[in-house]
Image (cartoon, rainbow, N blue to C red):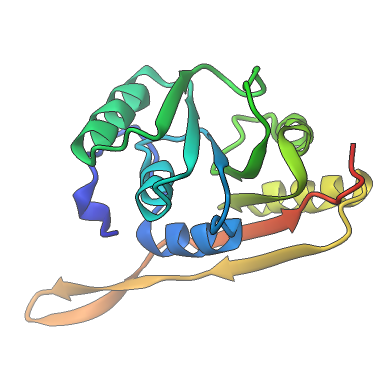
Length: 189
């Protein structure tokens, strides 16, 4: 889905189209019944996942009042009735285990959110995280190793967009993004 389709706000983060496409692929939602989106922002990941997988229930967690407003408006705009918006800050109580968890931001609680995400996942479930800061990537990699998640898939995505400049064009670079994905072990606690 094009980024321009979503209502956006100045201070509300949004996972951009190319990053969203890779993250949704890594979430492996075919056949999934429940996705948790931590820090849903504008809802771009939740909404695209819900539209691609109509039988999927999405729990979109968000703490920012401005983001909650945009998230609700975008859900209404795209007629996504399979998204349940939860106002609050993870970790928090979620009624059902998930097949997949997406984390687009950690609010400074990365290790706690990784641990919580792994507890929320069914065995074999998928955790996908995106980072722009190398420190967060390294922290996540170290923590996943420490808690016994052996196989981690990590990619750095560099995207540039053709942009007009005077009478010509150039490729305007976006921030590089790290996309980290892993499965919860079948025997993980």
